[in-house]
Length: 262
Image 1 (cartoon, rainbow, N blue to C red):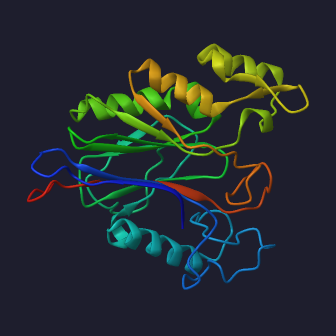
Image 2: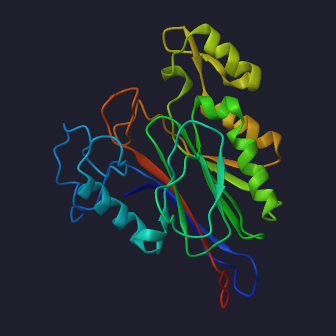
């Protein structure tokens, strides 16, 4: 289920929260419907969590329920967003009462919620301040990186009291595999110079994750970067490699200190 996971428990005797965060891959437990029972040639084979890509919705829901169980919340408290390559960030206090709102960032101070971001080439970012008890999940594609979704998410966390934020940046399409027109690269470079690069063919390209890391560090956020290119790895879904495909997720949850809750 997870290609990378870090579970930091609350420190004994401290008021600091624990954090559980990770990134899923295509692999799944064989007992999960829609997981390892599907032929590898199918576009959604594996642990697809995207409900908007044409996969069987019952299979997707079974995978989502399995992920919720893995991070210790009920299915309704594994919170997704309606991602739209924008810069809107929502503060979440509970499950959505209806459809998820358009947003590309979720922030919460609750320990009974897990926040999820879906990707297939874009950069998933998980943010946490264990001392303040605030976490966030961010979808940072090229439009979001250029538009400032990272700064908006950091500001939303500050509004909830976060001061020392640590980010985990997940696998995404690498710069060598993300060929773009020259004018598009120039717009990205105007936002973050390090995002401008060249492809394997020597043509203009963008390294979105490098731009995201640059923006995080500019806001004094400590960064851990999980390696991997989605287009080059068969363990991850990639829209650039396979235009009809599934989605993997970044997921994060606060864990309450011993004897505490929120």
